[in-house]
Length: 217
Image (cartoon, rainbow, N blue to C red; front, side, top):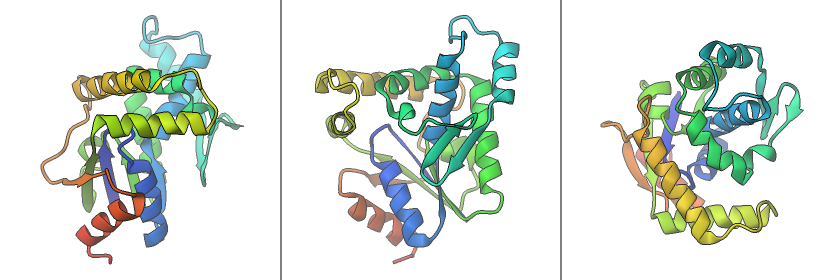
């Protein structure tokens, strides 16, 4: 079984998806972490979204080894779990995510992971592109001010980018929303058969809503 959760950045979908997976004894897959790992790969290379050639990007992606082990993300054997949450990555991931080659690589990793696993997967085209036949589809969102506060608190808690302001974080999220929703390939959308979930509550409260919808309470 696949439970797919789409939604906006910092809407709480990652925390809720992890909680759901634990309660259901399913595997958890964070699509965003895969995009972020690829963003690290591309930023570490000499390529940028301005000057890359498709053949160069494809060669780089084909040779990259991205592994998901419990709560860790490995890129070519190196643990980049902390790195992918840097503000630099958050500001760049939506730009690189517009590439069809990047999206194809993400979907390849997702489907490999889902072959033999009951899965709770979350991301930004999870229900529309990656798992359109998922048994359950949800779309999470909440007020942008709350999402900005969550993201800001995360940055402060991890002592990363401590010079960034709450207003700057809010602006970054609004720009990210725009890029995610307007990209030509696989934009963020709420598909017709998805159930809308307000992410404003606590993770336990939001998870309970989803469990109620799938009849697992």
